[in-house]
Image (tube, rainbow, N blue to C red; front, side):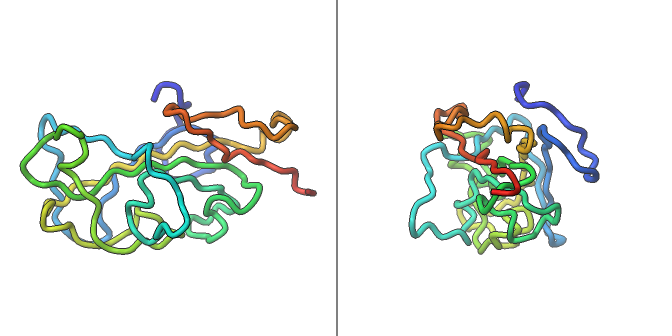
Length: 185
């Protein structure tokens, strides 16, 4: 994460780029178990792709997500990716919220944790999702939410005119979230 500029986690202000890490508690007064000593997990799935028919109300759809922020209002429907030029883009990576209660790691580094059962409001994402842990993974753990923000307006005059994609994520996928147009186009 040292390649991402850091910003203070003040919860206020108007960030112009960087990474913030959140520990998200459930919206209910539910018991949450802290991570045990030695606990390990990976999150996200570089092989998961958005495809026709993907149910955007399931938490698996948010293993890795992007937002093209049109508004500073967090739950504004225009903030989904993409509709337009955006004031800034964010790359969001949440962890799973349910643990099997036994294994501090697994060979895959993710099968000992699971997504909650329930639906996600696409405007709110998984942060405020309320649901139940599956019986196979009954222990509720905090969600760690990584958010990286890019200040996209400063790229207006730097984007290639031939439409090529100059940016890639570390797993090799192109990142095409910076299709920034001038306000008058």
